Image (cartoon, rainbow, N blue to C red):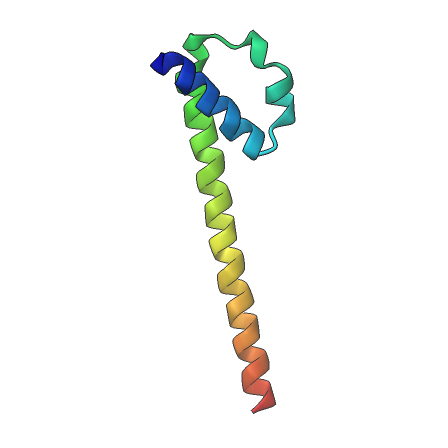
Amino acid sequence: MSEIVNSEHLRQQALELRLYGLQSHWSELTQEHHPLLSKLIRWELDERQQRSLERRIKNSAASDRVLKAKS
């Protein structure tokens, strides 16, 4: 049962990440692919979180400059 849940969890993560090419070929994947797939999805999630953080910091710094210029 945990293998099915794991597979469905990975598939759901791929869908949430909008990895549509992966979704369209999902039936070609086997249990052997799951460790690598899990790692790739983790890398993608980590990278997206990092870019989001960097974007928020950049936007915050830009807002600070605008506020200081108005003062």
